[in-house]
Image 1 (tube, rainbow, N blue to C red):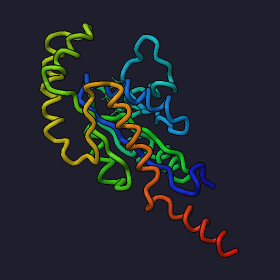
Image 2 (cartoon, helix red, strand yellow):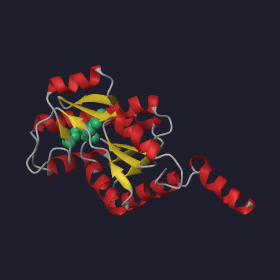
Image 3 (cartoon, protein in one colour):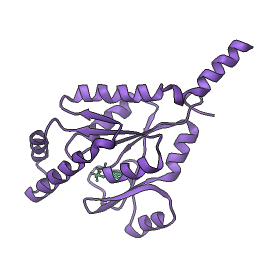
Image 4 (cartoon, rainbow, N blue to C red):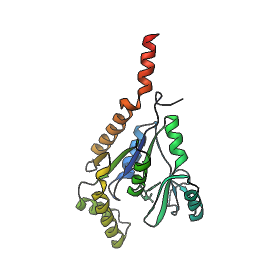
Length: 209
Ligand code: 5GP
């Protein structure tokens, strides 16, 4: 029934302020754990150069997105930088039922909605080493205007001030160390006794045969 020794799939939710390195860390984590799957979000934003529909995102129009919200098809959704983003409820349900571990790279508003509705999820917040370093990284991208950088820094401070409810905090100072810490969280959460009751039951059943 399940891919993971009879246990439910684990939902890993990762959030971070813009510039903390969340996207690269999530990409490496998916590479490292072949059985960890990234959930593909729905968004109303324009496709960027090099992005593919149904690979990076499901790119949809505003009316289509609104229809999904109205019909309760999204487990969470939020407006981020002027565009709508959301996670399919069906994908989460299927992941849990089929024992597929899912990684969600979503913003803090969406993570807070899931925390309310999916208590069994694992919530991870990526921190930059400090705000000066975050500013340096945002400026280093060389793609955003001064106004955008200022807004992102303000948002970052606000998001960090509200991150106390997450289950784990990972500081992305040294990328490899942050990746090791994320990997340790994934492994430990998968091995939680409370998630693996079926494993113990089947072991005991074998012993009694
Ligand atoms: P980008 O447009 O740069 O790919 O993503 C912008 C922000 O939207 C990122 O912080 C990303 O984590 C967030 N995001 C992506 N997908 C979702 C989603 O399904 N729900 C929510 N709430 N945020 C998302």
